[in-house]
Image (cartoon, rainbow, N blue to C red; front, side, top):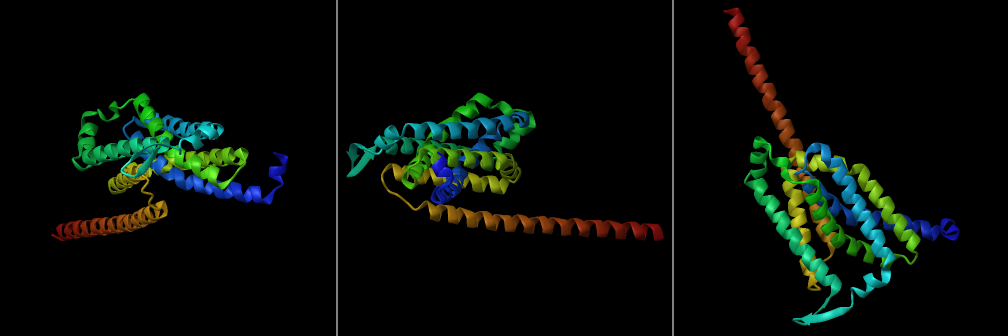
Length: 260
């Protein structure tokens, strides 16, 4: 362990892997933010901690069971000339779950079902236990790629575990702010749900060994977020100018009344 601390290559590997784990954890973080919106506000911080803590624990346990994880890539059977492994099955099921969950959330948002729940006070009907269970299911799916990527980059388990812990701690710092931002802006929430739907499709494709570069997906979604931020700024400025016009018009009416 002391040799690793004095090895520059180990530090470079740690920083690189930590940044990579952060990128791979974004989709997990967005999923947690969307789910926790159905909880009472007082329970959301605990849900973030349990969700990200579960993600960290899952990744560390998978790292400690490296031989089992690597055996997941062995072929179990073949479908239409595609070799299906244990990892493929888990990823496929997770992708279908994510597609179904995201589509359901988009439908409720578009049909304004959550606003109706808000009015009758039933929005917090989801229990903390049910939310944590759903987060735990997706933690397993997202953790597989994260761990397999870590194994492919470095050999030292200590570096892998440290990188995962650092990445989760950093996500925990910004989790609440990201969650509040996503849930307070309806258009951004729809965009986040679309992102999760796209990730679900990507996972299903990977389940059938159709590997698509995730970099393209993240770049496209990053550009979409940038465009939406510009639109939000435009709408805010437009609203401010409209308010100024109304105030000016009302001030003019008051002045005329005073002169009369």
